[in-house]
Length: 315
Image (cartoon, rainbow, N blue to C red; front, side, top):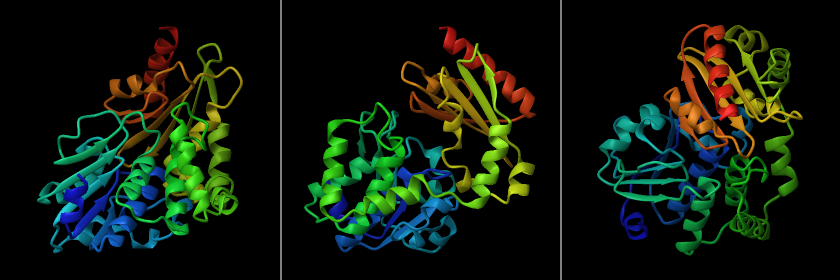
């Protein structure tokens, strides 16, 4: 894979739809690495980058997928996406590239790429991008450290998930040594909220419902709620976790109304498996964090998910 990366040029970089911190941070750090190698790079996203990540170095270089029209694509690299449909509108361009790479940490079959670096035991794609920097012998800098920290910390729940391994903290040590401003970067990622985000959180918490004898919760946010709060998708980052971080709760889901249906985020504590629930509805993800999209009224969607979650908790 390293030899192929070195020999290719005119890269398009993409991640998954509705990109999170790992997707954005990993793509930015990968783009920075390829430019360090002298490559021409165009980074694209099917959706707008979340507001709370736009401050990251080079985030302004990420363009809409349409920016690829008319460009000669010599190679394509996708990060943090386990299957073609997760790339959204970027996949058509990815598929047309003569050389294709995928770097990911989700379980799956990366046969849509010629070269792959897939490690399901890695807590974040950012950790794999970090390894590439080291394997290619390129020296990290302060800006890249911020990108990789955003990737790794967000996908590990700020180092709280059981996917964290000793190597995760070894990466952190090296990021600190090259100048990562941990206090500033972590505050921007985990503490500072926009006004629309706080207003939307008020609606989400107001919808909180307990079920399964208090072992599970659900919340939701309607399109009207979002319009009245003037919030974007990026303002909803992390809200699903409020339903999980309650004493006695083992699982939760949050439903976000979108033009395509209800976007469902599912979370569980160790011992649970929301990936199986998500797969049952055509989605997927990790054992403790997964998602899917369902159509219908919220009450219909809520009933189906509650039944699935109650069955999982009884198993």
